[in-house]
Length: 379
Ligand code: NAD
Image 1 (tube, rainbow, N blue to C red):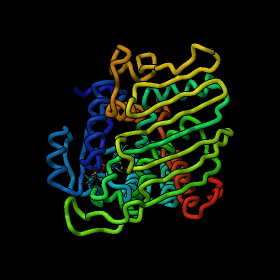
Image 2: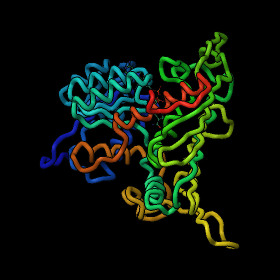
Image 3: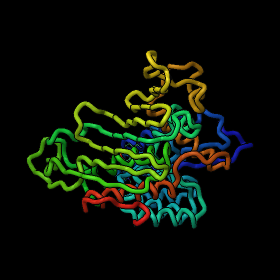
Image 4: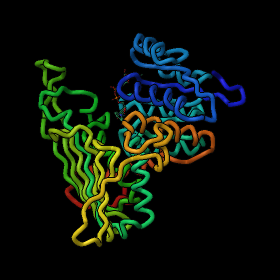
């Protein structure tokens, strides 16, 4: 029921695929999980497939659907534009929304090039509106704890970061072409998966100063369609590896692959300092492994389970160890966005931070192509 003492916030969602559904769920869940400082209205839904937009709008509780995304952006009932389309559409959609003075919640990666990302950042700054980018994994309450432990010095001085984001959804050479295979659509393992890992590395340890890297396309052609005979040439990276030199002096490794059999959502890191080590794997997203140095004979990794003492968790469940899931992270992301829109917080990566992530990814691409170390501030 609408609370007349609160302002309205109309959400316009573009896209009804994997992320479109996740965003729709997150907006619904945010309403039922948190006491929001706004009346969150699901105002409009758009998709290139107009019939699907209409059907999903009905099923997901949106007031109306639009056949064209430009209509959604011009819809006066839309205050916030959520973009969940393939990567090459983020730029035109976000720029149009910013031009219209609307807040933007865009899926990752921000753009298909560093140049686009820079333009988006400038436009967001000029528009003076709230922007957020879907690096949802850092909204995990237990990642918040990891960040706090690192910042508090509980691991001592950080010396190393060993990060990996691997999945296996493209491991089979017969997995067909999709927009994720197009360089012009920011395809490839680095943009698709690695961008999440770069976001996480920056969130936990700050700036990366320099990188060297190697990339490889393993499957140089794939069927144009599932089970079809026609083949398409593929030129994006199936796997990318890098060495990272952090501004805080730590050294690190980066790995992203969508070919690694057995891994479904292996966004993982081991961070070591002079006093201990923290390890995390998104496939077990409610757990941190902590090792503290200095207990000879009785030492070993300690398992820390997610629980209500970590900010965000208690909104879903009062008891520790009962486990959050992917969609709860998305709900926390939406909650942080709404708080930012209401001037009640500043959590979550905006277009400026996402541009830094794009710059780091661009440095890794240059380093791999030119087989050399690249200083990130040089590009
Ligand atoms: P998808 O292919 O499942 O969905 C894309 C949607 O965009 C479809 O509904 C399609 O009809 C719609 N679309 C395409 N062109 C359009 C247009 N011109 N106008 C309106 N709608 C259009 O893709 P996805 O897996 O949902 O990925 C979408 C975005 O989300 C990508 O940027 C991807 O990188 C990102 N993503 C993020 C995460 C995450 O964990 N944050 C996970 C998966 C995907």
